[in-house]
Amino acid sequence: MNRFPIDEKKLLKILKDMISINSVNSSLSENSNGEMEIANYIAEHLEEIGLETRYQKIGERSANIIGILKGYGNKKTLMLNGHIDTVGIKGMKIDPFCPKYENGRVYGRGSLDMKAGLTAMLIAVDTIVNSGIELKGNVIFAFVGDEEYKSKGTEFLIKEFSADGAIVCEPTNLDIGIAHKGFAWIKVEVFGKLAHGSRPLEGVDAIVKAGKFLTELEDFEREILSKKNHKFLGAPSIHASRIHGGKELSTYPDYCIIDLERRTLPGEDENIIYRELINLIERISEKDKDFKAKLEIFFTRSALEIDEKELIVVSLRNAYEKILKKEPKFTGLSFWTDGAILMEAGIPTVIFGPSGKGLHSAIEFVDFKSVVYTAMILIETIIDFCNR
Image 1 (cartoon, rainbow, N blue to C red):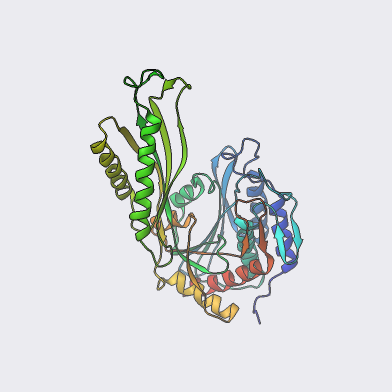
Image 2 (tube, one colour):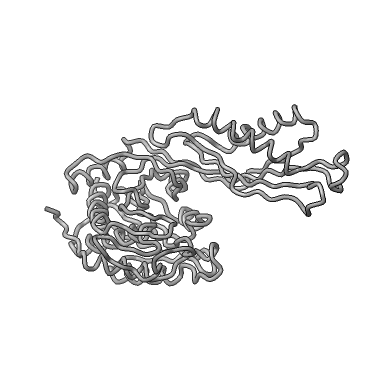
């Protein structure tokens, strides 16, 4: 029996309330209101519970909301982190902001990614306070903006707040996420020579030359990247996301640009990625004197990996076993999270959250019971970690 009963009606109401608030990231959609409305909603709840509540404004339509539950001792500080923004709603087959509870599932944009995690955080702190549980360490509840674009929220957060451990409450199907991939965004510019379409000896076709690069890229992924392997994450990958070039039908194009995304494993940094792709360019140039290209890595995010013996992982595992009466599954996540930023700031971080399907897709839902379990496990983790 759970020693700290969860108010499931309250949990469902908060989850539905948050789904009904349009918090599409304003950098992803011009028609979005941004995150201020949901930030204010969360702040009101934190203040009602009695937490010290702080705003960190990170833009005209975005902010972080931080609630601090202070312990009476000087023990370890735990941070729970979750993003309040969502991706856009174009192409959705359900009403994105009209949450529906049906057959144990809650539907709507952000239901899984990640308003369920936010709800579990709020219910956890509400239960702790109302149950009179005493903690020796502090708990920082960080509700952050802009994760779906450039993660400015967590970057702002770590300038002012730190902790001895953190849980990012992204959806993990109630598994414990101890690794996830990083990524790099790359621009490759291929240069040709303008000429009339009737004068092939005078022109160099930048689009055709770009095709040589893409062929080498495909071979590189198949022969090199696919042979790498991580216990939880498998192989890294690379794909061409966008390509653009040419002026008109009767002109040899002098320019073609390719945007790439490289998904990375722990230990793969920007220097490694740059060297890999420069080698491709140099190899093509050796075979084709007319091939000219320039490479730029313009944005990167690190992969995450945490040791299973870290205290935050141990506390989460203890809590999981106490609530669900079985051993947890440790897993790696293919998607990136703000956890990598926290790890880089020296905060040991694990990923844990509810179950569901449809992240960023036409039909998104969360399994309601998994949100209840997430809240229960967070409560026990907080007690275990902060009272050591």
